Length: 200
Image (cartoon, rainbow, N blue to C red; front, side):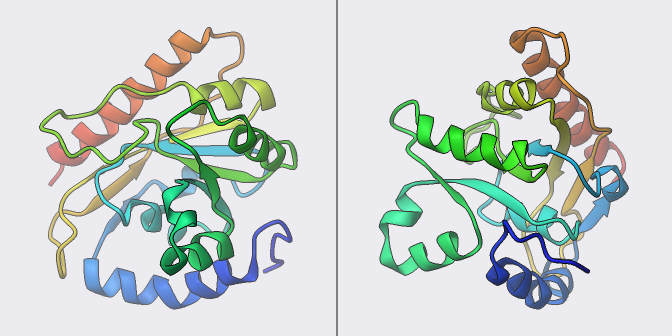
């Protein structure tokens, strides 16, 4: 497989080591991974419940994915090397971070893949799904990228019985308003989560 030159080698090296270990330990169900396009600009977007959520997509596709990650990970020397080394894009969540957006747009304009959690943070509440920020649909509209929705449910436990990620069919924002596109993404992620729960 030819490596994407825009994604650091550490990403692929870590993926090779991670995949069998992660699958053995957490025993996740990965459903509809064939919906992830093998090329072209894509934004993979879904709910965020755990620190390890991004790994479920990393092990589901050979594509290199640039995840947007909070800047605090880059400020801490203990984690900076990793997040920088695997090609994550730092985001300052205290303000509108145009630099992070521009880096993500550059990846998409080069037919790369972006991973984002539209809730903006891990959902530690009792709410089923937090309101979505507009970053994913805004970037998709600007770059004509496909959005690949996903829904994650279940527990991160040893040999989990219910940890599931389910992907939905990719869609483009096209002529939709950002409000309509964001609602479509939200509703699709909620549907995928419910489908997981209804098919235990």
